[in-house]
Image 1 (cartoon, rainbow, N blue to C red):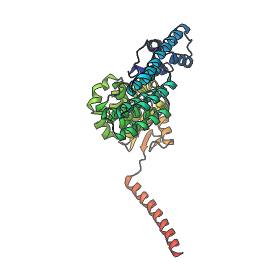
Image 2 (tube, rainbow, N blue to C red):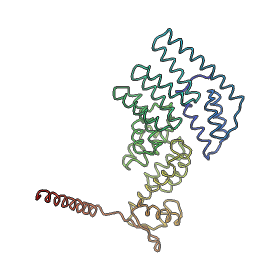
Image 3 (cartoon, rainbow, N blue to C red):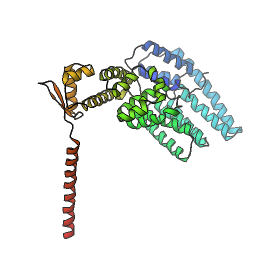
Image 4 (tube, rainbow, N blue to C red):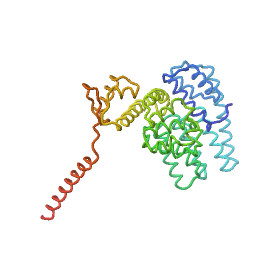
Length: 383
């Protein structure tokens, strides 16, 4: 029988492997072989059935029957241990038996029963630390099946427990779990803050690898942090510097924006978007990220000029003049860029509002509001 190894990283990797097979990625045959290897190693009969249905695979009846038989035998053994614990042993032994059953369901991919089983474990568990461990396991299940409601409710329960106490290690692990969830629902700014908070104390290797953690930190921080903070918190962070070179294109994306090397940035962005599209937490936000990084880069570039030739700007970004004209026109129409294009002369002119004029207009507006309120008050007093 397979060993219950639900706390190991390959549990979450299995979900990513299956997702990769739904994407346009190279080496699908190798990915399929790796996924099937994990399924057989863990004897994941329920997960195998759902995977065949989801991916349109023909079911290997012989393999499925063998896994189901192994699952039934193991479950019978676990049920016997639980009954023995209830009849002749203490609460700690009963809790251990319940946990073994929950981890078994988790291992084979029987998600509905896993959630119920972990709830039973939670009810029997004593102590903040062990209770938090149960909730973190439940969070992994929620993230595995991409159930937002389960994830959000479990995070709130874990936070409530942490208010009563809890050690820093579990607190920091929960930050990473929450950050991954926030990132998946496009709350990049909050996710970035939590990820940056966890850089020096990252231990959530059961959820994501450290390289993946650094990738998520850079991707979310690029859109979330002011330029100065990006330098101090990300570019110069020793923990990030240690591994960023191992992630293709990530250094070029980060330094391309900060160093105003826009051609380098755009090339890196094209490749990073492929990574984002193939990531099950980020794939829904690929178009958003593609757009927002370009808006950020164009805005940063135009801040240095009152006007610049379209050809010069296009050359800086490594694109054609026609492409840039169409791109900028779209962002201007969406009111994402403060500039205008003189197509006749081939010039892009910044239309950023003057700060003093903006303060003047704001003062007038506030003054009008104050006068209106005073008039209403005077009418009430006269009555």
